[in-house]
Length: 114
Length: 113
Image (cartoon, rainbow over all chains, first blue to last red; front, side, top):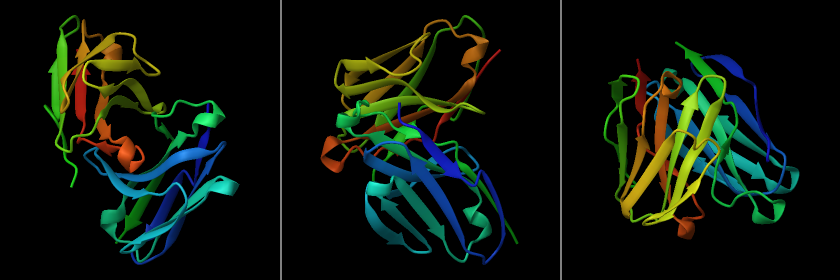
């Protein structure tokens, strides 16, 4: 099945710093999503971004589908940004994967210190 | 906004009990999912439903069953709970018309003693 690798696994920042999280995937995808898992365990949708670039406030994301990677940018980080960030993909049908299941990376644990 | 709710945030059950986890979505999504999340193993799909009364097994269906009698509701059933089913259970919903973007509920932390 499709492989999803996220880097770095852990990241510690001072409040106000910027960061870039990376997601590499091994095959073509129909769907790519970025999530933030809050301390209570809920997965919060950040971006639905199978290709292109999107921005939402201090967060932005870029997916280069032809090169099979996606980047999540966090600018002017705040302590409330702490938590685990997941990238998840749905493989394209032609790649032999199921056309519904999300395959998750292992996540990046972000800690923002005051 | 899409809203996915789950019946309990925390649940403690005993080995051998029958356990029902309920999930409700309010966006008329045709697809609903049950995942479990475990440290070191990540999120894994248990079951998927693409329509009322329709279901497909995911990666780890053993020990679980599901029920979808109404479009908005998807239930996960542990027929006889075991300690290795202690986990975080996450429900999600999506629609093909929006590219299968999945929205998750708050999760249920189940402990089986």
